[in-house]
Amino acid sequence: MTFNKLVSYFKTINEKEYKARQIFDWLYKKRVTSFKEMTNLKKDLIAILENDFFFDKIEIVKRESDELVNKYLLKLNDGNTIEAVLMEHDYGRSLCISSEVGCNMGCTFCESGRVKKIRNVTSGEMILQILKIEEDLNVRISHIVIMGIGEPFDNYQNVCDFIETVNHDLGISIGSRHITVSTCGLVPKIYEFSEFPYQVNLAISLHAPNDELRSKLMPINKVYKISELIDAIKFYYEKTKRRITFEYIMLDDINDTHECAIELSKLLKGLNCYVNLIPYNETNNIGYKRSSKEKILKFYDTLKKNNISVTIRREFGSKISAACGQLRTIKEGS
Ligand code: SAH
Image (cartoon, rainbow, N blue to C red; front, side, top):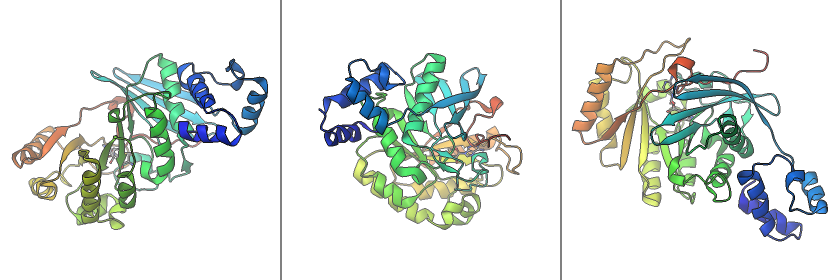
């Protein structure tokens, strides 16, 4: 529950608003896992709270570690599993969290969408991914990316509530500029998100410069064409003045040609954005190949020459299948 919702709750049971502060302090600063441990609350209030709420749980099933990466398989209360990945950067520690169990977007290159969406991950379960991993490694996380399994804008309200608590001073207290949401481009939600009063980063999985190619790679493009996506992004920029990131995976001979680079430059000309080129992580059962280093660098140069800001994503975790598009939900017993 967000801080504001908790304040409203206390009003409805005729309790003082400051109780919400006390609860948040116990939950996020002292990190207790039961109401009984909240020793400054009266017994009868604890009884009411125990009746109205429960403490959700998340369990670590498996942790795989590579130098700078820890990948977690996590079990939710109902037995469903999700994954989260912690990465060590020179600027801090970032956690990539899952927002859904499975995913319905069906991007052809992505392993995470092999299992269709089973359900939303609740905002509490998103928070628990942070709390559990901080506890496990005895560290503090400084950055959150919502880029694990799932399409965050297909679970919009929970993701917004999650961001509110992550950002709140009395919550996890991570600055909004350290939080990034990545979407495959659910256009109506981009318009809605432009009203969201937190200055978080928005990343768009673009991956192709024209509709013909993008529709082959990402079924969502059959619903929202690139021109509609760009209109939504322009609107978002006008409202928020926040620079957008475009993610572009590099698939050998598919979207990495010189023509694609030129077409992409034209498409993005004049937008306040930057492009993050992602070396494709090959997965077992899909035919795509990763573009060679030379091709990626050529593509990068073409964008640069055309005045598009561009970076090449540093690689993390491919040894332990923790890299983008390699996470997947494992069903119980499989
Ligand atoms: N559903 C959201 C967030 C999850 S995916 C979205 O689509 O943005 C996070 C990023 O990893 C996306 O840009 C996605 O397209 C990319 N990705 C998926 N599979 C990949 C793979 N095999 N190699 C590299 N990046 C991949």
